[in-house]
Length: 341
Image 1 (cartoon, rainbow, N blue to C red):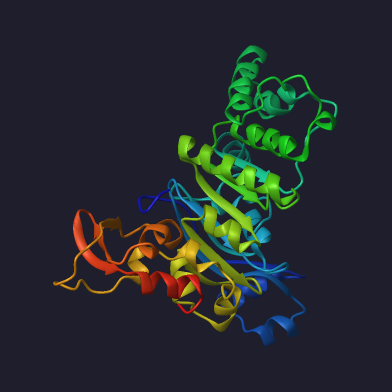
Image 2 (cartoon, rainbow, N blue to C red):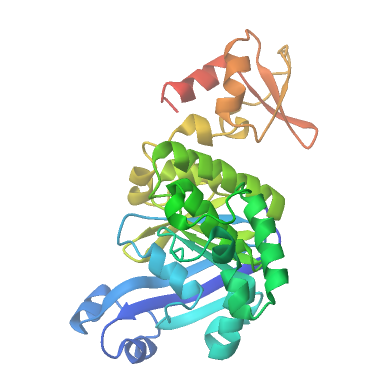
């Protein structure tokens, strides 16, 4: 997963407001109207003054309760919905100033999209569903079928090429949707609650499959979910939305340890901390007289280090880039496991 690097996608002062004269209203108010002014104008806010930057190769998760604006935000970022005000940059170019024809070309060749409802074409086989975006591009049949077979193999559906969607399980149908979105080789991949319609076991399987694909493909990904467990499994960073606004962006660990608002604190209150916190978060300064049972990386999660630390009478030295940065003992781990930290 990406820890830094170039910004692939960004937005600034991005608004989506529904109602008559929304664009002119925002222009008059400098994109900073009060809630009272919006109500008085009869306008409904879906996205308010959003700013974010997604790095190349990053899995950037957008979270929020139903109606918080997360799906509308993603549709604004891809211009499937036209924003009312603001800027959206992809590879340094403002998409909102781009001619429609060029925008369509970018969607077809550089963006992939997967939604909660698989939207497979029921009269087409798996092979033809996956090849469909390439057919729209005018790719000749042999080349598009060759590419589709590669993507079908990538998502583990070899042997299903000539099945129809009705002959597949829900998880298999979602794999077809993922393969179809990857067929064009997108640089930017949008996924809007792609696994929420699946039962828990298949959902877990698809999350594993998603992480496997990302390890191979290293896409830049914007992923929507309302499930915090899913978010912490997948995300490099998470943006939490409330009433159309992004209220905090951070790593899962940062959101849990340093919530910016009471809403974020409540949102993360039941989060499984042993799956989120790292050795770095719970370590103490090194005691020079201590004997150590071994070394553990600073980025290792508590769930991974707990078995060896809890079973040891001695602390473990925490190292980062080959240098000692702290120590973790049994008491620190137990405090996380029993919810005291």
